[in-house]
Amino acid sequence: MMLSKGHPIRTYNSFCIRLFSCKPAISLTFEQQNKVNSIVADIRSSGNENSNDDARMRQRIALSKAITLVESKSPSKRMMADSLLDQLRMSANKQNSATSFRLGIAGPPGVGKSTLCDAFGQYILNFIDDDTSAKGDNQEFIPDKLAVLCIDPSSHVTGGSILGDKTRMSNLSYHPRAYVRPSPSSGTLGGIGAYTFDAVSLCESAGYNFTIVETVGVGQSEIELAECCDLFVLLLAPGGGDELQGSKKGIVEVADVLVVNKADEDLETLARKTANEYKKAAELLRKPVGWWGRSLDQSSECESHHTCNQSAVPRVLLLSAKTGAGIPELFDTIISYRKYAQKSGYLLEKRQKQNRYWMWKYLKERLLETTEQDERIKKKLIEIECDLDNRLIAPRSAANMLWASVVGDVNRRD
Ligand code: GDP
Image (cartoon, rainbow, N blue to C red):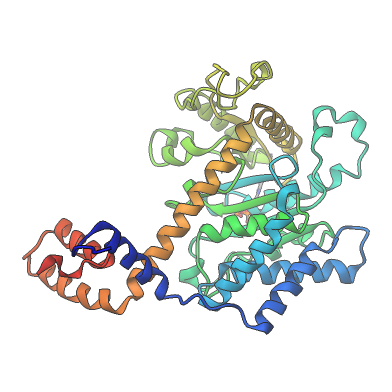
């Protein structure tokens, strides 16, 4: 078939060749494949409370290695990560929305996120040991293994977790059924990225059926956190309830539950007042029809969330991570949400949308990276930037020219 210059098929093919030729389709070496297989075997090993300390430790080490692999930008490690995730996905049908839960916790530094994760984590892990007959609804889903992934969006700048989350969650870190992973270390990606989503699914492969992703609410990170979790909790400090009108509006809009922390000692009255302010302001933040929220009680009537006509607002709770007051109510809220979202199909649909979100995000990242590394495009970029600096072309035309280079039609500009 003769194709004319600039034919769409030709340019598309050329684009694909360019995109993938930067990362030749080489396969893993024997050692790399062995390493992946051994990590997969250790992750799949039981690692539960009945297994011995050695087995549990092996599983934790394997999980840490696996997360490091998915965080890595090195081409060979990335290939190992792909192989690892593929192998684990084969046995993934049991880690679906019916058997796991993903909780996102965001909030400004110092609001008490680590203290809450520590206290809340212990509460839910002890739940299974307690007499469950008095727990009502909660018997439907009782998590027995908990993972906490702490994401510090500034870690790629600071070179690691300056917050030292692991040491601050000292009780949880040593619990035999908990896994606490601090922020990515130096050299890996910072902030929430596609790898966080992968890290959550790795934890689930290792049997952690409740995962908390904790992050500082900065810039885009809270929006991305919402794409990583089933339920998004925004932790707030006493005071500043009127901020809903201003700077915090964006983050509050994506949150499912607002929790005012530090409702104890001298701060209790202020915290209560703040929670009331947030409740009033939240009335204005109506979620889409069918979304779970304060109208939960009626929602049990709904066949599916599409047919549910109750509009809802985010819930507002009062809590003290220090004394533990309000933690059972937070857990009840999560369990009620899960029950509704599971039954209505909302949870399954949400996870499907998230999968698509991360697919596109990953593709965009790869595309940008490949474009930036392509020598031919780099050369063209120098010319285009020079013209741009000299105001010979507009930014929009410059972008079009660059795009033409990316899809292979390099001569279009000439
Ligand atoms: P993070 O930066 O959001 O993870 O906050 P931390 O969990 O490190 O807590 C910051 C400070 O707030 C620490 O000194 C905690 O002891 C304190 N803190 C956390 N939760 C509470 C709480 O519920 N009540 C009080 N009074 N202090 C708290």
